[in-house]
Structures are given as structure tokens and as C-alpha cells.
Length: 483
Image (tube, rainbow, N blue to C red; front, side, top):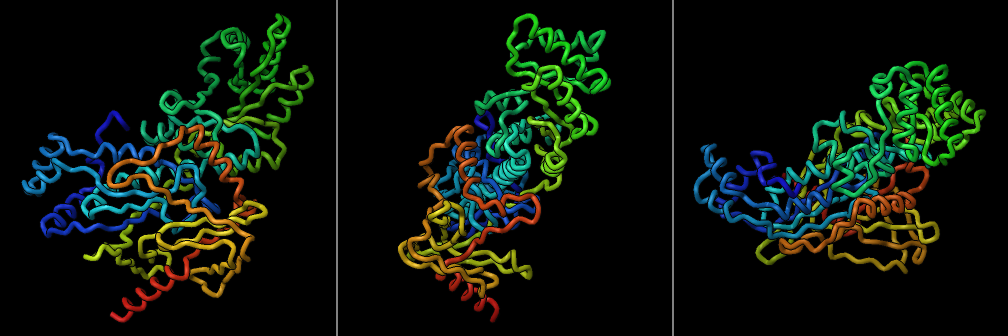
């Protein structure tokens, strides 16, 4: 990100709208919300990711001479507006939910408070960054859940939709719970573990499988995982691997990180048979790793079938989120500041109820059960609202309003999860390392009830509106309904 100018990474209409605002002298301060409407993969939650790259993007916003010359060549922008762009910089505020946080539909992941021209420009790039990384982090979290404590390695670079998707997808995968990645550039840039074994071509380039295994073991005695399915897994691959392991042991080499990898066939059957063979030969500590078009559903089934696999290399289906290739985040106007400096709530109507927006300058409080530490609900409210956790709190479904829950004072805690990132154009937030974000994400997932984590038909966490916000929303709907 820091080696490229991404200022023109925007949709054309953002610039035409900016010029329209400029020509009309319309640059009042506004509030935009970034949120999504449905959890990916029919899950019960999502994982927020990509904030560090948003910060880098906003810091680097600057129309170069080349940018302005290109826009001039399009023949649609006037010179006054182009001069304005030449001196452009972001001067607004941005609030965001930190990376690695568990998130739910309808709540603002980012809130942009800025003059409308500035807020309009950053829409596309912010959505591009947050949508992609949040999708891959969420998909990874599901795969890691299905692995049930086994290590999951991200192996998807060659199948990602381009270098950026592979690089930042690997970053998001580490946040979501992977123990390492095959992507060496990601390892360098984000200081995360890089992992890998060898390909079938390594085996095929030698006169025979045994010689290939033996040579690899001599090169990497402390990290010796052998791919055993090039010819015949049980008749050739596993016996040859056992032979090499035995020779290593006989020569006095201590076997630490070693094992086999399966990349085809019936992984449940083959892994159980290979486990028997390895154990019988005295290699009970040998790891059995598996790859081959894995996803959370196949991992779940293999676990149910008793597969003897303890390490998983997941590629295509993770790095592309193949079954759900879009996160669906949107960017909607929520308020406009008036002459008195007050934010006037704005709402978008739709015949689809789920597309009606929540108006106003808002924040989010996460409500936890005080005894278990588990999430009870998220409460979207106006930014100025405060709550006393020693008092009872009644929350309700904003659609099916008769569904109410009374939280007894003292039985719950609340935490504001939307934090300041930029103030008056200056970054006031220090991004943690990817390893720190991943650790935080693991802690975040412990606050979910098991019913919300499950892969199939999960329980949905309630995202409710405060009384004040609901009242304003209802009033705006009634006013617009009279028109």
C-alpha cells in the first residue's frame, strides 16, 4: 500500500459528484456509515479486518500532477475543481471497530464525519479494502472453527484473484485464525509465519519416490513433511516415508517437526490407514497434514468421520471465499450538519425492509453477560447517549418490536466498540501487529455463545436500537410516508 498512490482508486461518479458539490458550493459536514446487511456464508457473525490498509490509504490521499492531468484529459472536469483537487487532503474524522473484532449486520464498522466532498471520495476504496479482508477473515474463522483446535495453514496464493487479493487475503486469514501462510511476501510484510512442504513435481523429478523423500529429509531434517500421494499413498508413499523416518532415527537425528501430507483421495480413509501404519512403525508423533480443496464443511465432515488429520492446508476455498465471494458492505449517508452545528438525521427508504438505514450520528455499545462474559446484544445508539449498567435496560428487536429482553441492573456490562481513528485529518490510532490482532480475535471469539459459532443454522446475536434512535427513525419513516 505504501508504495502506490491509490487516490484514483475510486468510482468515476464519486468525482463527478464531488465536482457537483463544488460547483454548488455544497460542502457541509456529513456522517457516512459503513455496514453490511447479512453475515457471509449464512454464519452467525463476521470478523472485521482491513483497518490498517484504510489508514494507509487515507494518509496517502493526494492528487499528483499526473492524476490531475489524467482527469483533465477526460474533458469533464473544470479547472477550478482540478485546482481544488491539487490541494486536496482529508480533514475529517473516522471512527472504526478495531480489526479482529466480532461484528454483526447493520452496525457501523466505520463512521466517516467529514465535508461531503471528502467523505464522498473515500467511499469506494474503503469499501474495497474492508469488504475483502473482512470476508476472508470471516471465512477463515469458520474453517478454523471446523478444524476444532488443529492448525490451519493458508495455501491459496496461486488461486487468489490477483496479487493484492493473495497478499491481503493472507493477512486477513492470519487475523481469522490461520497459524501460517505459504505467501512469502505476506510473511515479510506482516511478520507472520510462512509454512510449506513440497510439490508433486519434487517427487517426479527424482528417479524414485524414496530418493526424493530421502533428499528432502536430508535438506530439512527439522521440518520434514513428506507428500505421499504422488503414486500410491498406502502402497508406496507412506511406506517410503516410514523408511526415511526410520533411517533418520537410526542415524541419531531427533525427529521434531515431521510427518506426511495427503493431497488427494478419500482423506478420512487414507488418514486413518496411514495413522495405523505410522503408529505401528513407532512414529506416533508424526503429523498427518491434508490439503485438496478443503473448506469448513469438508473439515466438519472429515472430523465426524474420525479422520486422523491434525493439520490442514486450505487454499482456494478460503482465499476466494468460494461459496460466498462478496461481503456486501455498503456506505450510506446518515446525517448532515446544519448551520447550528447539529447533525440532522437522514434515512434511506426501500421496499426491502433490510435496506432501510439507521439515521444519525451513532455509536455502538456491546452488551455482555457479567457472569459468563458472553455477548448478549449490540446496541446502536446516538453518539451522545450514555447508559448506567447498574440500572435495568430493556432492549428490543427494531423490526419485531414486541420481542423484548430486560437486562437486570448489575447483571451486564457495556463496551463502546467504535473508536476514534482520525481526528481533524490526523491519525490518532496505532494499528497493532497482525499477530496482536489475531490474538485479540481469538479472545473476541470466546465471547460468542457456542450456538452462534456453529456452521449450520447459527443463533443470531441481536443488534438493537436505543429508544431515542428508534424513535427518531420511526418519526422519519412516518414523515416520509406522508409524502
